[in-house]
Length: 227
Image (cartoon, rainbow, N blue to C red; front, side):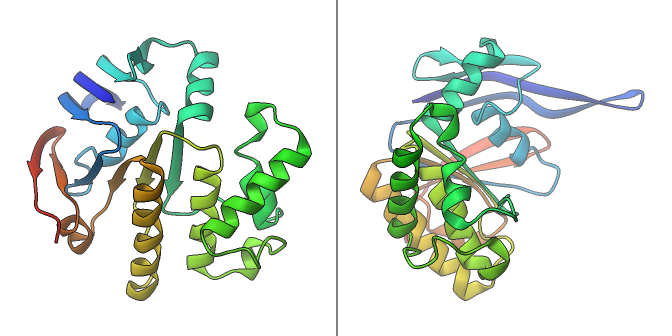
C-alpha cells in the first residue's frame, strides 16, 4: 500500500520557487488501479516520480509497505525500486544497441541474478506481452507498439508489486493505444499489481475505477464506475 501524507515538492526557477506539489495526501491499496490526470504543469509526472522513488519530496512522506521512500539512503532506495517498482515511460527508454531480450534483462542486473536466469526470465516476459518471436530484434526493427511492449516486459520481468506508467500510450496511434492498454489491464488483473498511470487521454481515464486530478499541485480523487 502507498500512503502519501503532506507531500510537497518545490523547485527553484531562477529567483522564484515553484510549488509542483502542495501537500498531497493519497492512499493506493494493494492491487489498486489509479489514473492521474490534469493539465500540463499540474504536477502529474512529479507525483509519479515521488511514487517511483526517482525524486524526493521537499516535505511529507511517501510510504510504501510501511517504508518511507523519502527517508531512505540512495542505496536502499535503489534496492526498493529494483525489487518492488516497475516503471513504463512514454518514450520507451530502450537502449538502441541492445536486442529486445537484452533490454529486458537490464532490469534484472541489479538483482544479481545469473546470466542464464536473466535470459530465461527476459524471454518469458517478452512472450507474456506477445513478443516471443522478437527476442533478437533491435528497437529500430520494431514498431512503436512493439517497443512499448518491450518496455512493459522490462518493467514486469522483476515481478514488481507496483507498476507505474507515465503516458505509456502517448506516442502511439489509437489502435495501438488500445492494444497496449489491453496488455496492461490483462497483466494488472493476472498479477494483482498496483497500477498507477498518468495520462492525458480522457478515454483511458473513463475506464479507470479511480481517477486523481492534479491542478496547480493540488489533488482531488474521484471513485468511478468502470465502463
